[in-house]
Image (cartoon, rainbow, N blue to C red; front, side):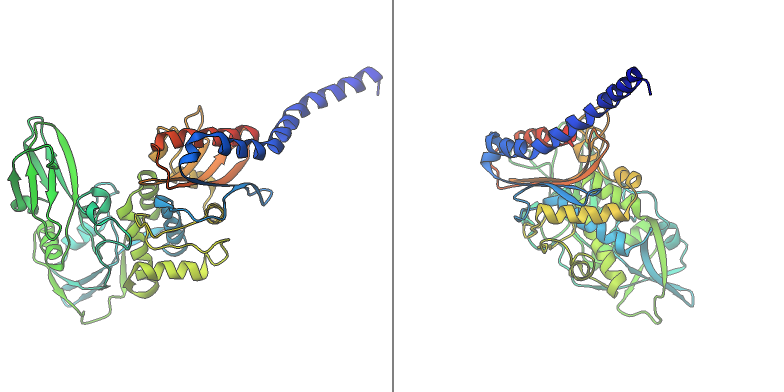
Length: 437
């Protein structure tokens, strides 16, 4: 080979290698830079932070900061619920167990949250029940309280604390629509129109206040256009009244069907449920997923059955045993470590193809709960948020400029500053990871 050509080829190879060398050098120095960021950023002085970053290609933890410490995960818990659904429920959601006997259709709830739920695709259940000549509801094995353990009792009036139930209707929420003059235009389900009571407006009055024990609603009229959702207070009597009114025919109830309910009606795709749960952090759907899983495993609707099954079978190899009490993360009793969340996210990625997975998760700057955060020309963060008072976490996947997909969990507990300040520092660190690995 001529000398000139040889040196030209060497020069080309050198120039091509420079970006890789820079990235490699940057990556080797990055852990120290992140440590310095944790030390100097004032936002992290007001609480307790933990971070784990993992490279699935190398099967190597790239960075750890308090990754073995337990944090309050809030809605990061939904990642555990998501994986549970993936392992047990299959591609379609079981809506009802049923059997026909003579001219009567006997049905039993499985916990499916999709029936007349405004946030989910239309299911097959309504037409199926509407066509039945005689309808009997069989009470399932359901002993759960309306709230999960460790939930804040005074959130009962807020949409994000919708009650769990064996056969929920309308997403377990009553919708109230007020027009521009503040007049109430619509109540859905309409059956609750007779439960409205009006009171004087004051600064301390909420617009709508449900009685904690029943479905009596106090309405304070204000001259503004607004839409509100308030949880339904369930009982078997309320449920039967709702279902009968919805179907426009009587529904009877029994404790025992004359024959086994050995057929299953499926409603909607599982992914449509997971996407709603993950994108907008829907607590109600998360809770119902664990009820459906427990029903499939045991014929009983009990959250603890689903959690114990997963801990004993699918999650026994996590680095740290999760303290896991509900499906949504509303419970203050939940405690997870960043490195266990990373291990869980690795399992999820091995179960779900990346294109499908990233479509289900919120994307930074584009969708879901991080639509206004982590903005870039192309999304680089695909992750689940988790927020309760004084707690904020983000766990998921980060696409780096070198083309890698890394797994991370960034958890913060007991901080006393506005969460916006904390998120700004989190973004700075995640951008450092994006640009240097």
